Image (tube, rainbow over all chains, first blue to last red; front, side, top):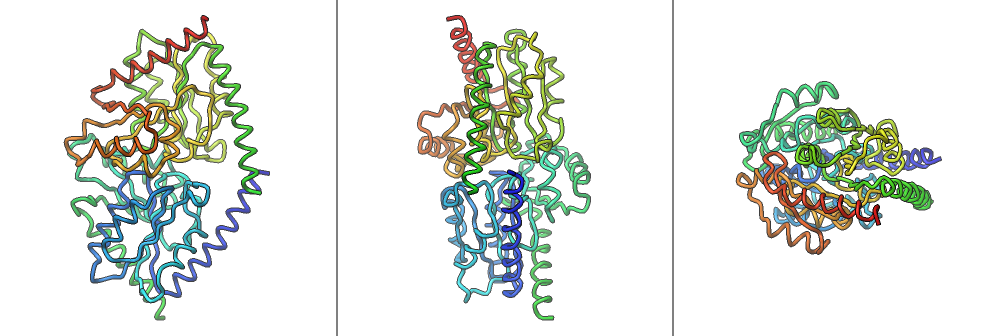
Length: 226
Length: 226
């Protein structure tokens, strides 16, 4: 009985996600769903990304949090459209769903020709993995301070991700971190997952991430023009 | 409709939690529910705790993870009873519930006179806060690498906790961390929450935590004898 209800919810969510995906395609924008634990550095990665793409690409952001507009405030100062979803309005759920994202996207001015839409999900390494939003790619942010065993312990999230940003590498010299152990754990769960070690604070390693985004933006625009 | 189903689930959970609480009381043990983000250091805190109480108090552990027995293996080497719950057996849920904990507790030999039962919840700063387990106190582990704004962004978890272990203070000298900002955020959400800064790695600051546990164990034993 419970499972049936859950299945219905997921089916309804998937239908809305499909509508979102069509809308993003029509608008010719590349949309990503950024996920990760609380404090993994998702918003700092976004700040860095917006700064690095400034003057080159139009970025729009949808921020997901249970409470507060702290993250949106960090991003609005870059002069881009930022829509905050606080899930406490929806019962305090632990993840974004397609309906929330669709309604938030409607608030981004249509006059703004976004190339890239970044959706920052609620900080949670478990639940967001189960809800499609209509975004094209899933981006996982994991910080090195979280340890090397997380792919094995949170397999669904790592299985569903297209790129892993291994953040806070500026702290590596202060930690006993075994990078090969992390790579081996990722291989066990998702052998094709692309790992990009970087520091959103110092910008080290960010080139590969920006190139990956540019690739996504270009291929979306190519599709729209064909 | 959905909310009704959820309410029924929560009511059923609370009834089982009450049974667990009675059982823990009868057995004269102090039970805690340890929660926190993935990688906040819950298992390392547990390892430190078991070592510091060795020869003084009998500790039993219930480990909650979605997948793997990695955490249980880290603890079993101390020669104490450790029961692992992997929630993938229960559909991969993002939190422990009272039924899982009750069933795991049944597997701890009754001949083992535990003074302290530590339940380590699934790494998640959101969902575990909503499910009572029957434990007497909620312990929240937050690492300083997660930033100062988490109490405001995850208010339910901070509101429901009895003690906050602010972990990884050995990394403070490498971070720009504003301890007063964290304290102010905690005050806004839960003014009476006790904050214990510590390093589970170096043991610095752990005395206050062990004293808090001893207080809980003593008061539980006092109640059982009265």
